[in-house]
Image (cartoon, rainbow, N blue to C red; front, side, top):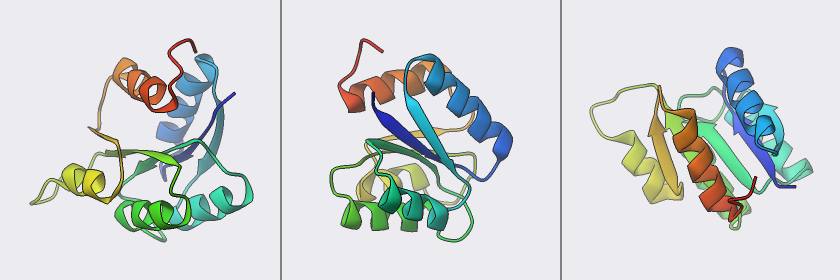
Length: 123
């Protein structure tokens, strides 16, 4: 079973994502900050990380950059509800995220991206 780590500082969003991913057969961990997410990856590696780009204690872009340095094989999906003057989702992809979604997004689109990244269409 593949393990997914969600880095999201809003408990309601994290809870919904966890329930969606568990319902299709994944083991899911949760972290509420970039720093906590990195610590969890060090202690219990994940196959995929879904990270919000606006999280405390190491924002999502910094977290993606650090993850790609420390864990070059981990797959990353970035999400954000924030809007900036530049397309932060493109920046997230340039730093190593394979997919990027603006909130709100369709659960099916996220599940499809997760399956694609984990080469696991049968979940």
